Figure: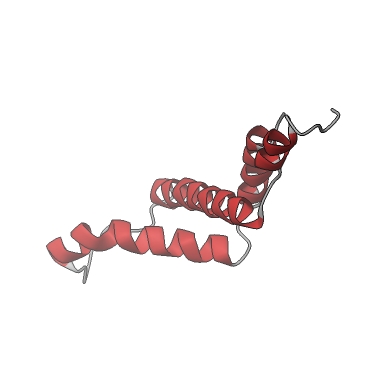
Length: 96
């Protein structure tokens, strides 16, 4: 595509920015954390124990614990899903 004065603004608007990439990375990280939280729940993390459990309080707040664990997993490198999502989102938002 040849850049002319008429298309210069469009070309600049399509140029990726560091802020846009940071926002996409944050969204991808949130999606991976949500996926990991669901996998942890399916594996039984956050379920009440049979003995010496925390009762109703433990049941109410177990989802927060699972979500926090998933977020820590993503911060430590995760399973690579976040990077794949980031690249896919970046490709879709920066297409011409």
